[in-house]
Image (cartoon, rainbow, N blue to C red; front, side, top):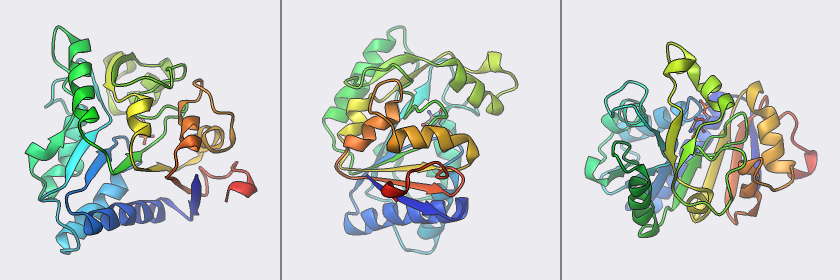
Length: 245
Ligand code: GLP
């Protein structure tokens, strides 16, 4: 696990975007794994700028998103589909047929999870972008999730609902369930970059990088990935042990 501590959010966003840009320049048909949340917004802004400056084309890029809420229609402002569309897809030349997001509307949600999992198993993610929850979740793999899980329906942790309630009118509006790639899907990616910024992530990042590897802190599994880079700002990286830097 390589750890890069940057001065601030802007630098994290730029460094992370440069990894993605390099990946696309080397392989224009690359498959990206994408994350939502407030952390990657700056990264996506840098990708949009790179596209506008003719540095990259997304024409042949394929994407798979990590997760989606259950119970929010696609056009709900807080659905992850809306998030991706407004923060990235509508600003670049990606072919929306190459965009994959977990479906979330069916009487048989487990079937949807299976379908998305099949898609993931038939494709290889070249570069997966991850954020981290304050409780150590990646995607929506909450503490206690078996590390061998593939795509599944998860009941969201109270901490996650509380953290994400800032995007809703009240916590009651935050969905209770989501569909998410499992740890196993994430670990199959060829490369991973995890980005973390701000004081509220320092404990979670410390446990992910320096803590024991166990399912009570799902991000800790990334220590076992052969090609994982953590890019954080000084606030999020404040507890990291010197030997890892
Ligand atoms: C969300 C997403 C995660 C994201 C995390 C952190 O709930 N499911 O993929 O990494 O929470 O979000 P933020 O970047 O807003 O702190």
